[in-house]
Image (cartoon, rainbow, N blue to C red):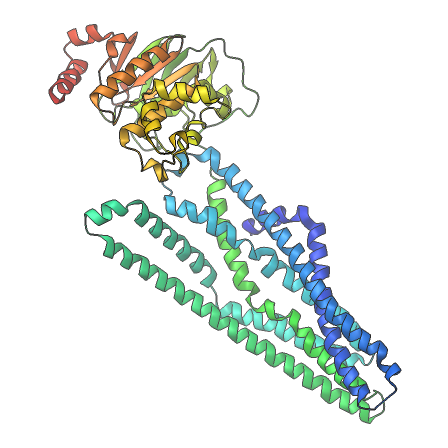
Amino acid sequence: MKSMRWLIRLILPYWRRILLALILSTLAITSHIGLMAASAYLLARAALHPPILDLMVTIVGVRVFGLSRAVFRYLERYVSHDVTFRVLSQIRVKFYQGLEPLAPARLLNVRSGDLLSRIVADVEIQQNLFLRVFAPPFVAVLVLFGYGLFLAHYDVRFSFILAACFLVAGLGIPLGIKGLSRGVGRRMVALKAELSTQVADTLLGMTELVVYGQIQKHLAKIQRTDQKLQAQQSRIAGLSALSSALTGMIANLGLWAVLVLGILLVENGNLSGVNLGMLALGTFSSFEALFPLALVPHYLEQNRAAAERLLELIESEPAFKSSGGLSPRPKGMDLAFNEVSFRYEPDAPWALNQLTFRIPQHGKMAIVGPSGAGKTSVVNLLLRFWDYDAGQIDLGGHSIREYTPDDVRGFIGVVTQRTHLFNATIRENLLLAKPKATEDELIQAAQQAKLHDFILSTPLGYDSRVGEGGFKLSGGQRQRLAVARVFLKNAPILILDEAMAGLDPLTEREVMDEIYRLMEGRTTLVITHRLLGLEKMDEILVLDHGRIVERGKHGELLQQQRLYHMLWETESVFD
């Protein structure tokens, strides 16, 4: 029920629009009842050949009910869908607001296809919340009371017949369908999520699947999941048809019950014969309010299952604790780790173990070491993607926890080993770093990253699209585009996490020359397994299993003949 309370809280701000939609829906059904009842009354009166003037009011009534039904139904659809789309927009906003603090730490174990399914499919399912879950019962109750009072004006027993039929069709049938469809809604949500995940995995890994001949195997897996989903959808379709048939049968029984009672009343002189058809067809028409009720439990189950999947993510605890207040003013751009310890899981080994170092303002430090030594963990902590378990990290004389994550990231320009490019133009991908950058600034940043000449060689220049994930670019071009972003951002702190990965040796030296110029006047941290150019660093730290095992300048570390010297020799062999 927690998920439903969350959804109701999102709906309540629109209660005025909701009330208007319910009234309009009730008026639309009332117009339908009035149209059928007035038509039956008109035919009965006309059979007696009265003067035409005696029929004028009824004729006008038929026309009014016919037109008003269309008008009220249009307005009801307009208002109810307006409410639905407003609620969906709120759900999307709440979901993204809850999701953003979780990235990337809490999303590592969430498959991209499943995440996409939650963002799209699970949110879209909530469009049924008002239209097919909340509105139909309220409208049915309003129609029951409204038309029941009308019938009571002729004989209260008509109202009892209507109430009994509404009770059976509006409560008994939905409960029966609920029992037959138990669990189908949840299974459909789960199967849709699994199908989306499988399709996304197949599309993202298409190249590898083709190379290793696994396409047919994955397509067969998708087909099996699709068949399971179709089976559940067919079951719901069958139950929907059954519920419609049963509701129609109850409607016809209600019509016959009103007719039988009406005939007896006509014979006793307690009811005019011309009113008999009006009451019977009016009763039959009132069942329009009951047809949507049968599948309310199914849609409710779907909505709850989808909402629980959304809440499962957005109610997760972020990996870091934010102060929630205003960030302090940094006294400088120095960085300091003071006996910092960190691990990714409570039972995992320490990624960093009592790490201590300091980079003064405008200083240049490199961290090297074998894979798994903890180099990237340093970057993750500085960018507030994770929070450390012990010790303290200072930025500008203040604990990094005192800053908001956005402010910390605003101080830092970073090039990571894995560069994500959006399916947009080169210009748009560059403007992520500085949305209000001028054309000259874009060109200068691209020139510094040795990318400008390549951009000019493309048909549309800076307006050329890079494709999904930048697949139209080579690995080196993607990396240079990431470097250009850092040049454009021009942040006071520079972090390079394997920034030269994917570059050929010649381009690597050219880009490194530009980066060294960018380092001037900035606090710089270089994370790398490549030792090229590290002689220009003020200090080099050698990590192994999260600990500093060596530190010093390039020449000093080579003379010590330890791990750094071993890495240097290994690199020299492969170069």
